[in-house]
Length: 179
Image (tube, rainbow, N blue to C red; front, side, top):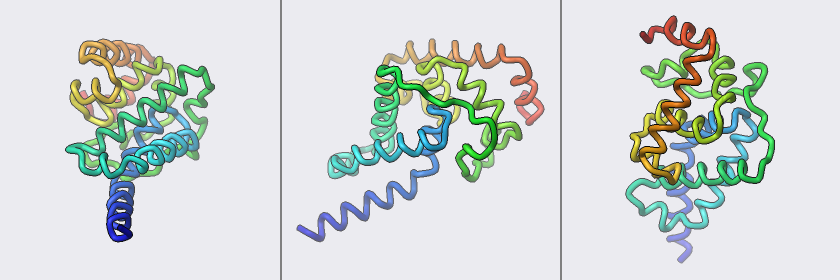
């Protein structure tokens, strides 16, 4: 009995270590604040740990964890708790090694991107973060957000349109090499 628990704990620990940076990035982009992101990831992992036997044996445990995190974030908004979005300086940013193809993670002015995300309504922000930062398919995003693919398309399109309308943001991204 103790060996199985130790093996499960070790498996969970490996999962957390391997996924922590990506979970933190997603949580940070959803909440806009380092401490709120840490709280969101930690509370999500507490919930997941209790069900780890089932979650760990699933086809995509990361998708399950992401869904729990999105639901926890959505519950926070339903209760109308205040978020502190777009920190004024780089102290609140999640430190991570950027993927070589991730232009947004390499952008010099991350605070402008965070401020732009902060202007989006929660569902649009979730759709944009999951589709374009996490590079999930529309179907995976719909599963994570517990909505239809059409709702994902609509929220993502509206969110991107709002981001494109922000003065200076498009120029900053295109100067980074995207056209």
